[in-house]
Image (cartoon, rainbow, N blue to C red; front, top):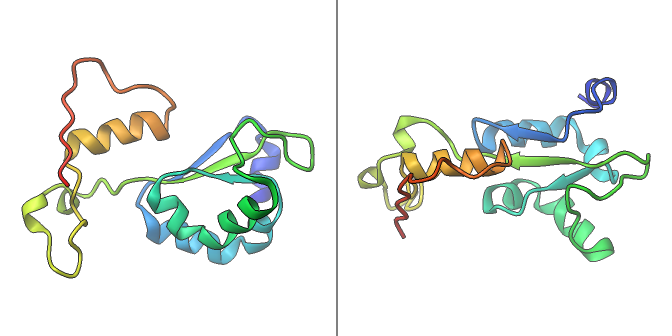
Length: 134
């Protein structure tokens, strides 16, 4: 992955589209890359949870690492973002269980807005209603 990103320096963000499971595999196979200062971590709860070990060590040393911060090699950091699952199974709040009470706390419009903001860096289309379920 590191070689791919070096060959394509326009990559500014890596989104884990299927949620924490793919991010966990990424963490497992890219630990050395995660330890360097070439990556930053989105501030959403899912990203912070998966990359807690690396995000916490950075905060103690340098404070938050925004996307535009320069890496040790001089280029901009690549932001890692664990996205909200888009599975239909996780868009129905009435399907929550005692084991996973927040599994579907966001309905489709919330997830769509999250994707616009965190994957594409733009606001969701105007007039779109968002529904938050606590």
